[in-house]
Image (cartoon, rainbow, N blue to C red; front, side, top):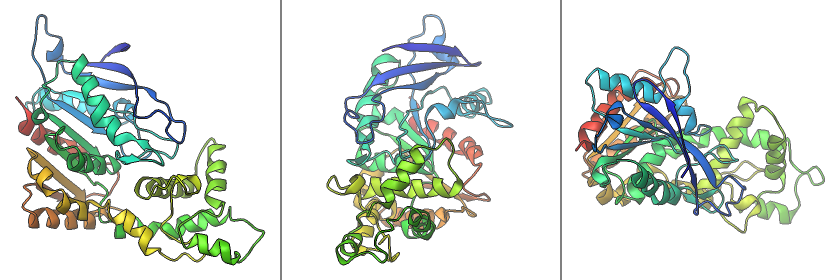
Length: 363
């Protein structure tokens, strides 16, 4: 396993290269060999030390990546710098930080398996965790292994805790995707308008056969044309980015290997009607409902931390409140907070969550 080292004071940043078996044959031809950063605390390199450390995995939001979390930040700290400060201030003890690269050609993923994107859930807990445990002085038990993330990263942390409870001891979700009816549905009309620019022009309105296919959530060619257009661009507009994210969510929540592009859509592309059977596939993955089904796994966590700003522009504060209620009704112990903020610029919340995660997972 090739390793490159870069000094960051205090602590050390290590770049790990790993070749995945889980990601082989993924439908978008995304890399199976990836480099991602691991941060080691100063205590790791003390001469003669055999000390082992808790491990925190940081999951990036959609359109983000693991490496981006260690980049220089203007007027701010990157994650290793923030953790180093928290350690120096005595707010938490030493941990190893891992920042997986799970970027895809559709802009990211939700850290669950999808035939339309790849087996990123298995990749994370089935491949990267054993890799890190094999090459670094980690505390290998799940009780000392945690996940944290914002937005899609927060969603991924929640779903990993539900689907792989044998791997994780604690999770932190900052503004994690939840309450899909309010978080996703309001943005689809703009996506439909953007896709309409690429609609086939030889049949308007579409013929009966095409209309029937659209009612099944199938693409009439406009989604493929839109994606082909994006893949030729050097820069994406805000509208194109949001449309791409919605398509990425469709690929995550409603994959179908027999459908065009490998997934189905929750709306009729021509009429704009919500397709209830397709939308139900999305709701099956909404943490608000999934938490009740996976309550035993969540009860086993040493820490389940949730927060959200009450001005979140994706309305995720409502989803967070619904999820908090579900957890309370299911008897799942959790820590929930709201704060004065939006979906953006909320890295400062790590000052609150990571010390709690450390306290729960320390040796």
